[in-house]
Length: 319
Image 1 (cartoon, rainbow, N blue to C red):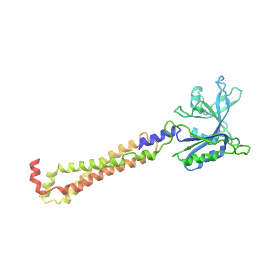
Image 2 (cartoon, helix red, strand yellow):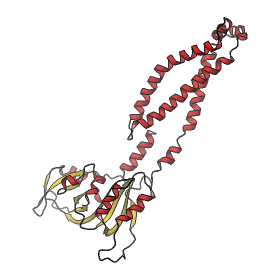
Image 3 (cartoon, rainbow, N blue to C red):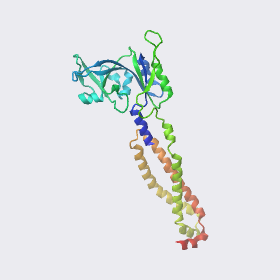
Image 4 (cartoon, rainbow, N blue to C red):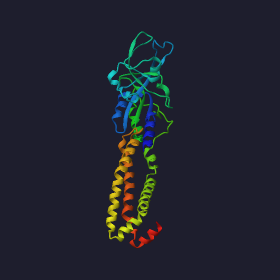
């Protein structure tokens, strides 16, 4: 289960859950941002490429610059752009080359200055690298944009259909635009991540059968190696129910440390590298511990029923 969670998080971190609807100069930025309020869509924002920008520190290199809506910030960083709409956002690669960080004041080649509102990560992991070494500038909703990016999880056809709501008719009012195109930000890890399908492939039933068999047989062997002891007790007049009660008490004494150690180990592996809340994996593990203990307990109850006082001397000889 932790592996599934890690695969899902890797898929999301790589941008596999981001859908891009492209319609040049046809995207309503405000409507695109508003899609994030829809169930199943965690963030959304609009973007368009504008004139390149040149910094005094890099006079020979004109960098791509993009106008973005405030909602686009959640696709780049956990920090909202609304707190610093006058600044620019720069990529991590650009920040590494120049040493600029959030709050830095930078000079442009035309003599103007600008504040760095933040630094965003855009790794080279198979995604479209248009923003990998670029500048993002927050703009108002007054202009139309070229693309609407939507991060939906889990991915569903509904999110793709909702993305079309951000597309407007042409500014002149004539509805003769090209059909918007839909693409995935990063498809290197697959077109979609079907967590339920992967979960169904986990051999839970096989593991449960295996645990039941191991636990039941272990308890049976444990009791059968003591068959001479219990046959002697039956011969001395001890009731079979008392023998079963004795075994249950012994089992309880064993289960306290065994259960505690198992729970500690389970707690560790439920936390280790798990991007999701640990309690879900922990509870599944507890279920298997409970199943194992129950199978052991059932063997304790039923195995003594097959012990016979009449076999006492045979058991003694076999010893």
